[in-house]
Length: 141
Image (tube, rainbow, N blue to C red; front, side, top):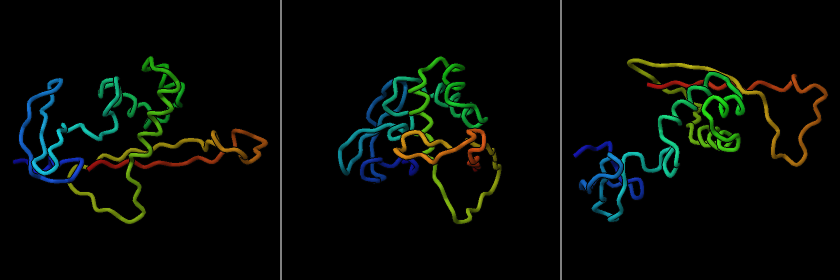
C-alpha cells in the first residue's frame, strides 16, 4: 500500500481501494470506514471549478496581480477571487523557523499591498499609495 495516502479523517494508513469518482481513485479507511480521494481536504475540494482553474489562479496571484485582475483574466466573479485568495493564503504553511530544502527547489516571491478591508476602525491613511507592502516568499521542494 502507498503510505502517502493516509485517511484525512483519522490519519490511518490502513485503507482499501473503493472504486472511482470523476476519474479519481477512491479509498475507504479500514479504521473509521469513511471514504476519500487524494484531493479530499485540498484547497479546491468541494469547489465546482476545476483544479486547473485553481492552479491558473495561483499562478496569477503569485505574479502579483490584484483580485480584480485575476477575476477578469479567468472570467470568475470578484467575490470568488477574493475567497480563493484567502483560502490559498490561509492554507499556506507559515514557518518562522529555518526549513531545509533539498533537490530541485522552486522559489518565487511576490508582494501585496496592505489591506484594511473588514476592519471596523482601519488606520487613517492620507495617501493610499503609502500602504505597507507585505512580501510573500513561496518555496516548493
